[in-house]
Length: 259
Image (cartoon, rainbow, N blue to C red; front, side, top):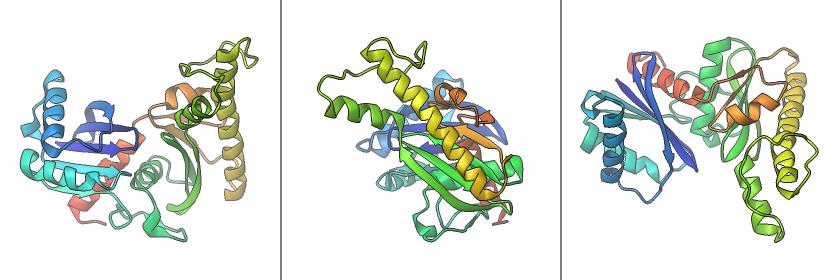
């Protein structure tokens, strides 16, 4: 069984795969101060409440945008899981070609997203990843990652409003009843939810035009995708766990020696 970890700046999404089947998944807060021992205790609890055992894990695959945690997860694999670890990155792409100016700077999550999207569609495609940043990952018609766009994430934007505008409160991120807010909170919710959706629609439209493919599929992923992507008409599909699937595919290809 493969344990996959999508390590973001805000959250870590863990997924336990039995072959290609995602048996369990969990989302926890990213903590750069946790040690390998502490992550082992956390995982042991998650596994137990899901009726699983850490002893069943035969491999660990990690896509992280938090470099200091690489050493922690290496130690976790060696000391507590007794299994090999693979780190997704520019040197471990599962055969994905990085057709960009600086291949070494491409984030592991974007590589995993592109691999999963190409495996799913086998054509030019767009992944919209709602995380700490809102990423647009673009795959060409011949299956290469060709770049995209990075915009501030919705929670980052909301926190900036709270920090920089003294009269604005912290708010719950929920869909407001109307684009026309009737009070401060619903004004902020409208600008955040509907404003981001409009940005996503506009970016997808522009990317499709640049690709020369107005029907290129767009899939949304990330923890906030179920809330935000449903407001974006240009998004064709929502898969909050797409990145985990990409991590699995890359691990399997590496294990098989085909990349």
